Length: 377
Image (cartoon, rainbow, N blue to C red; front, side, top):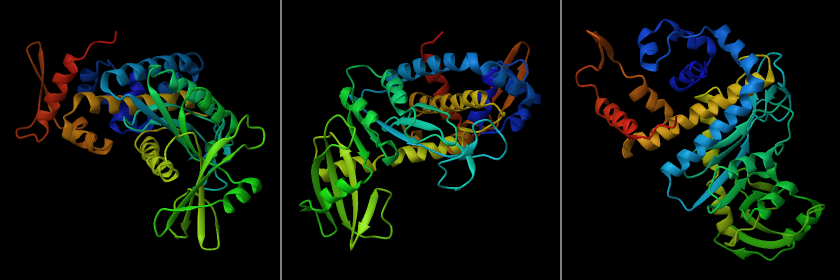
């Protein structure tokens, strides 16, 4: 039943109703080993009835797979976690779909899931569904600890997050785990006075930087804050805290031992996670609501994260180097949805491609790679 949910996600059949097209596709049944394909109502019942028991087990299996494929495919000595949340606008009376953080559609009901990715590999190392009124940083400490447990203890780790994660308990957890971090700070009156009166070092005609130590109320210790002051530009990014006169100010709390401008350069690379979230929401059914039950939809969200990672692992381990930059849409059209014919001769089934099929060699390359991989069961 799980495969009947994941295969359509990978193929781009995002809604359960659309996946019913596979019900009468005998070639698909043969190639996947599925004797039949469940109808949409059966799939929904499975999600509702199995979610409470199955979701914790799926988390464990998925984490084990993440750990395995990271070790298989990477020689990196350090990793970078990027955290973000997103709003998924929904229409209906699904459990947990309520008004809350939804900048794209203010006032609309939504889910507000949380995601963490690894910036170099582009793997999604964790994520979960939350009600629409969840605060941005709700659950981030648990998500960090889950993602950290996937990596070898010898790995050096850095973390980036926007101002929604400017939270004392999160910063303290990162610091206590010897994780280098860069988190966009929220302004306060005392902090604003400090960096408005600070001395700035000119970087170029537009940018100047400064730094200071500051301990917010209820935080256990002071931390380093780096400030970027720049001449106001209408196209300034979301790092801007506020503007005053002709300057815009941005601030990051960090324990990185690099220059203030280097901290901002490091943070800007976090934009990769925004692309991953767009893929999860547009190319996979992440944070969708196929049922009215929150736990069932949370299971569906975890399956969509697994489907995304399976595609990433397949691309990284089984496809040629010049295919590594291909988008999921390109992979679907060029490889996963290739035209072919299943021929039955005697007791032998043969999958044949049209003559001069442009990507037949890539298909065979991937198949050979798959056959050399160790079985996980």
